[in-house]
Length: 273
Image (cartoon, rainbow, N blue to C red):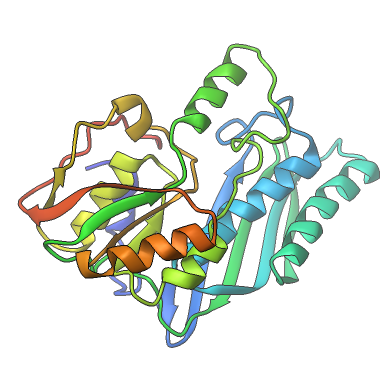
C-alpha cells in the first residue's frame, strides 16, 4: 500500500473515495498545488500558476457532474513576493473563477519559503457521478488525447519552454461534455495521475473488477499524469447517444475496453511520495 493510500485509510468516513465528497446535493473537493512538486517558478508565470491551481480543482467538480459555485483559497506566500506578484496571482485566481461562475468567498494566507496553494471548491449536483457505480459489461472510455502532459513535462525537465497553450500549463476541461452525458454515465473521474492509475481507483471503488482491453494501450500514454481528461464507464446501449453528445460538444472519445470480473493492477510508478 502506498503512503497516500495508507494515510487516507486512517479516516473512516463513507464520503471519502471520489473526486469530491457528496453531502446531499452539495459536493466538496480540495487539491494542493505546490512549488517544487507540481510546478517550478520558472516554468510558468504567477498568473498561469494561479490559473492552473484553480482549473485542477474545478476539474474535480466537473468530474463529479457538479456545478462549482464557491471557492476557498489557502496560500503560502514567499516573503519576498512583491505587490505586483500578488496582483498577478490574484488575477489568475479571479479570472478563472469568473470564467466558471465561481465566487471566491475566503480562505487563509501565511508566509513561507515556497509558493503553495490549496483550493476548496463547493459545488451543487442533482446527480453526482461517482466512481463506485461501474458495472460488469460497461464500456470504458476517455475524452481527448493522452500523453501530451508527460511529453511537455519531460521537455520542461530538460530545460525547454512551453507555449501558454500547452495543456500542461492550461488544462482544457470537459465541462460541456459532462453536462450532456453525466445523467446516463455509470461512473467517472478525471485523469490526474494517469489513465492506468486512475482506472485502478475506479475499478477498486466499484468492487472486484478488471479490464478487457480492446487492444494493448501504450504505457507511456497510460502513465501520463495531469491530463485532466475524463475517464468514464457507460452501458453499451447508450453508445450511440454518447457519440452524439461527443459530436455536439466537439469532444474526442476513445473507447478502450469493457469491464469484466477479476482484478486490475496498475503498472505505473506512484506519482506521490
